[in-house]
Image (cartoon, rainbow, N blue to C red; front, side, top):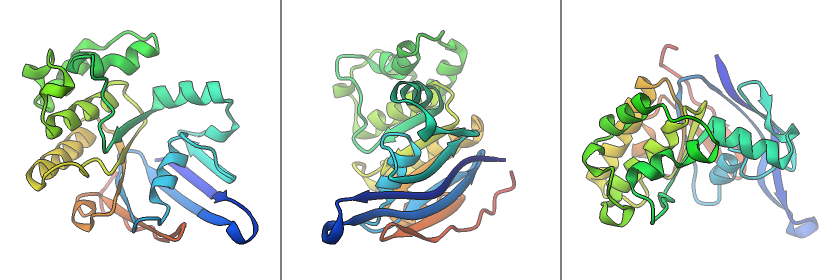
Length: 229
């Protein structure tokens, strides 16, 4: 079942001789439960695409449809609420709140939305990600790998339709990188999450179910999904 679709998506900057086509007529679709990697060289448009499909920026033209919702038809306030409830983000720099402990960081998006915390579900995420003994620690007392695990737990905690990961292992050593990616795959399978990951690393991309390649703002290969849904 299709959960995400971009239709004729364009993002242009400048005009005339200074026109930059960061995204140029991009059409992709992602099925529920897929783990998709979007790869491309620096400046290819992959991060711009992630920002568009996550509703962090608006397109010049085209549509992004998440779970049958056209997100660019929403007001800024509606989009903010929709994004908070339906899209989880994992960033390269973790983006944890330094004055909150691990548990408080994980449940922060739920509390911001005024929703009741599903304690059993959150505890299960914490256990799977190996954070049970760290819940009272502040981010500054954690290693990079542990901080990224907290970021993954936070993204999962709201039970989003899609998780978007922007170079999630960019600041990690190779051993921790493999651990974090393995956990992403485990949690994707365990909680039936759809994950879209941006990376420039071909080896990392191979862990995904499907690889979409983008160059000069255009999709050059949509890949093939070998995973049975």
